[in-house]
Image 1 (tube, rainbow, N blue to C red):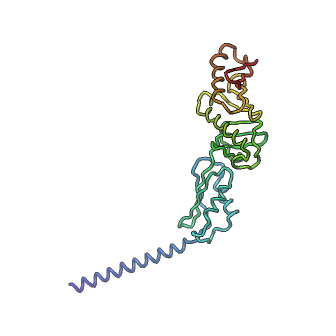
Image 2 (tube, rainbow, N blue to C red):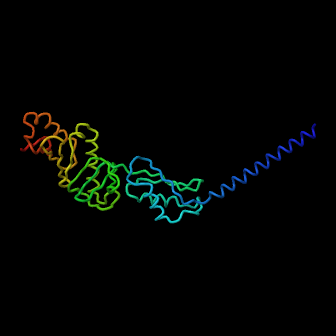
Image 3 (cartoon, rainbow, N blue to C red):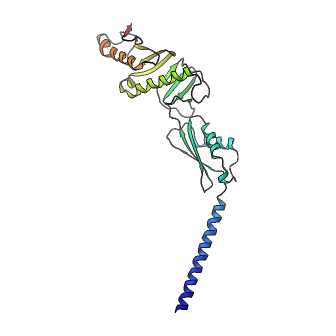
Length: 259
């Protein structure tokens, strides 16, 4: 019995060893098969914007990086891939990594437009950080519009913060002002257009009514909105609708109305 049991145990051990060896071999073989990149690119988006497509990302990588197929996955320059995709307009960040199936994976985060500027035939977006980037042919987002003689010189396909300090300062102020409006249901619903004549000369146009508000520059906007509120509460009710065409709120402590 002991001899038979020993033979049985040895047989089982041999079978287990052979099975383990086979599995190890198959695993090593599979590993060898996926140590090179297949050349396929998997693109995912971290948001719902559709300024760019998966095809845009793949095209940019294939054009600027070169051949991926057959390259060892541990030799793929992921930092270079990320730099390539982050040069695409509207892309805020690209995260690249490879997986054992041979795919190059790219996760795209797009910039969130906060304002749209229209300067003649040139238009561009700005996010809340003051980073500007071109309008996109494929997709348009409904955000507050600032139009007219925008005091920012960068045009065309520019992407980034304005080069001039005066322009950065103006842009940050207008973003702060519109943020204030967006956080207030009253002004968000009431003001439909912001027209810029110059850096310190803006006209705010309400959704209803004939009057236009001469606002000046974006600095001191809270006090100016307080004066606009005074007009709506204490002055406008005393006259028939459309009596005034211009309301100047630029001067501290004054609301100057003109027919």
